[in-house]
Image (tube, rainbow over all chains, first blue to last red; front, side):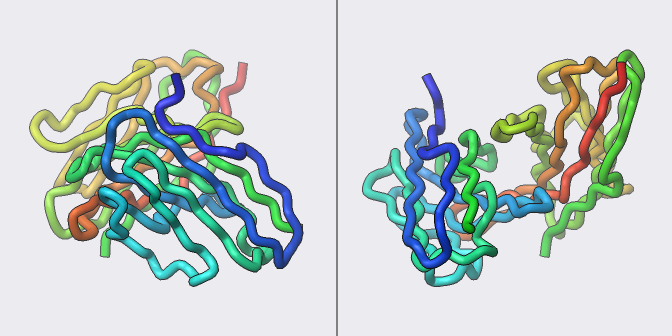
Length: 112
Length: 115
């Protein structure tokens, strides 16, 4: 059983489109994150949620809107996609207050 | 602000040789340090972590790392590299972001293993 699963694994879309990436964890964690890995493999946190509440928002453009319907899910919706949004997006989860996060397999987003 | 530096972008070793990947961090408080590995097309897998206590920590796949506060370093080592160790390695430091922690990653070191 996959602990942190993301769908889709690959996503190719045109500029200007709106797309969503879904993340689910079955670890019973109450904290979830989105990280972005750019073309140079640099990983940076975007958001974190704790019990469906936004805790960390690292100056991400408003076009990115995370949504957490429950503790086990954290989806990422991106409006008006731009070429620079092309990256691998990783979802992660942890227990509240824990520094140790489990990562999903990543979603490779390509904007053309 | 916290930061992590991995000075080596790319390292090539022969199979069976020893390995050391360097990591330096900058963080005002006691650091929580991690090494993650990313195999091609795969997600991030935790190799090992340091929170406190013994400065030499053991991880999975035969990896170990040593925390040296005086040098602000957390270098990853393996005595004998296997071809399957070829991957990208990321060092990270955790810092508090309100009630949550966030990981700040280094830019990674790509390991190539020659037969």
